Image 1 (cartoon, helix red, strand yellow):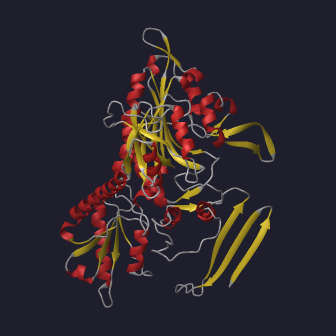
Image 2 (cartoon, rainbow, N blue to C red):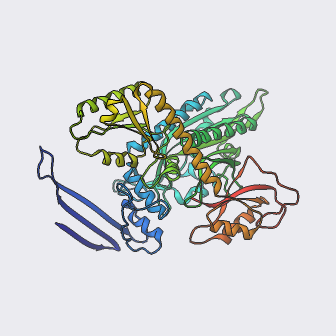
Image 3 (cartoon, one colour):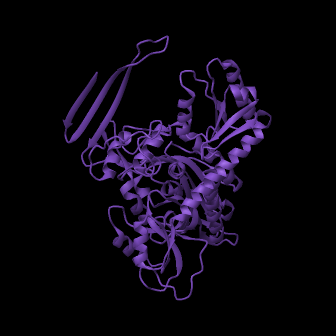
Length: 557
C-alpha cells in the first residue's frame, strides 16, 4: 500500500511518501511491518537539502526531478564521472559517514566519520603539545560589542554570523552572536592574562564547533552551517617567533593531508585579497578535485600581526621595561578534511579509506560453501581477527548469517574498508586466507604463518598507492601558461592553472569579474612556496605588467 500526500502551505511544498512493506521477518518476529519515509521539502527561495534532494536538483539547473539511473553498486545510483554531486551525496550517506538532519546545512556525523576525525585529532593534539600548546575551551556565545571591535574582521564574517534574539517567548535586550571563529571571543582575556614578557608566549588551542549560517548549496563536510574544528591562538613577543610557528603548523597540516589522508597538497601563501580578515598574511595547504576541476582550501595558518593586539590592547613589558604589543597567530583545520578525502579517493563502489585513518582497516568474511565445515571457518575468522588485533591492526569479522558473502563484500566496499580477508573451505584446508585490496581489487593468498607481516605490508602499500594515484591525477590537471587566452581555455578544461602574476589586487578582482559565470569565478588559490624559475621579462598573464611570482589559479569550493 502506498499513500501519497501533497500539501502546499505558504509557498512550502511537502511531499510525503509512506510505504507499508510487508517483509519476511525473522523467526521471532514473522510478518514484521516496516515503515519507510521519504521527504521532499522546499521552502521559499531557499535550499533545503534534506536527503540531498533539492540541493542536487538545484545544481542540475532545471529544478526537475531526475530519473533514477541504473544502480552502479550496492545503493549507488550515480557514477563519479557522470554526476559528481549526486555521487558524493550518495556515498557519504550510504557509506554511513553522515545522515541528513532536519535543518538545512546541518548533518549528523556518524561514528564512521567521527572515528576518522578522532584519529587525526590524536595525531595533531600530540604534536601541538610538543610545541607547548595547551588546550582550553571558550564559550560559544559572543557579545555584539566584542564581535564588532575589530572592524575588518567582523565585516569578513558578518553575513555568516548567527544571532540568538529570544529566550523562550521574551526578546533579548541585547542579541548574542554564535561564534563563527574565536578571535574576538578569546583576545579580551589575552589582554587580561598577558602583562610582561614572562607571560609569553601564550599558546592556546580549543577543539570545538563553530556556526557560519548564511550560504547556499550546503555540502556535507565541505560547506555546512555547523562544523567541528580545532583553532589555535598564540601570542609572541616577536614577529620572528610568530613567523616560525606559522610554518610549523602548516607542516602539521601537510602531514594530516599527505601522510594520513593520502591527499597531495600545495603549501603556499594567499593573496592579499584572500588573506584572513584582519590578519597580516595567510598560508594554506591547497588540495584539488580533478573530477570537478576545483581547488579546495585544506587548512590555514595565519599570522595576525599586531592588528588584534592593537584593538584589544594586548600589551606587555619586555626585559628592558619597555612597552610593546604582542604578535599573534591563529590556525585551524576542520571536518572539511573528511569531505576532501571522500572526493579524492572515492569510486563507483563507494568510499575508499586510507588505512591510517580507517576505523576498520580490515574486515574478515567467512565464505562457507554447502556441506563445508562452517564452524571451523567461523573459528578461523575469529582467530584471524584476534591475531591481527593483537598486532595493533584494526580488524573485525562479519559473522552475520542473514547476509551472503557477496552482499557483505559490497557492503564493506561501500564503507571503504582498505582490506578484506576471505576464508573458505580451501583456505581452511591450506592454512591460508585470501586478501582483497579495496583500492585496486588485487587478490592475494596469504599463509596464516606470515599473516601479520603480510597484512601490515599490504596496508602500507595501499596507503602509498592512494597517495601516488591521487598525485598523478592532480599533476595531470596542472596547466602552466602565460597568456589570458591560454588561461580561459584551461579554465574551461577544469585545469589547475599555474601562471605568472603581477601580484596586484585590482588585477585579481578583474580576473574574478571576467571569469564570472554559472560555474563560478576563478580566483587565486595560493602562491606556492616552491617557485619555478621566473625568467626576466615574464609578463603577468592577466595584465601584461611585469610578473613577480608564479601563482595557482582556478575555481574553488
